Amino acid sequence: MPKVSFTQNLQRHITCEPTSVAGCNVAEVLAAVFHENPKLRSYVLDDLGGVRKHIAIYVNNETIADRNKLSDPVADTDEIYVMQALSGG
Image: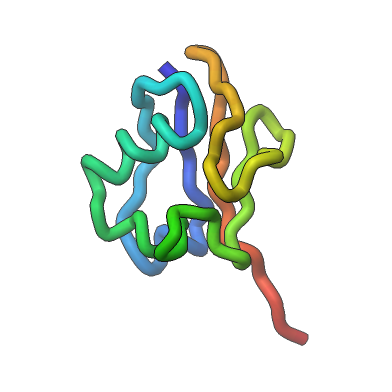
């Protein structure tokens, strides 16, 4: 099963430990994570189900191509990283 990890920045706002869940694409994997942790969804996705602008999602160190439908394929051995962008200065 793909492993999903979240940055410490997200973990400061909501508990989201690394987890392994089933899924064939990013949407299915995140749906499984959100099923277990519904509050996390609003931190990662907007009201239309797309990735929020301040969030980056990587599959095996490559950014996902489809930020709206999350259709990027995922294999059982893949690692998905969900990161919150930092800004300021």
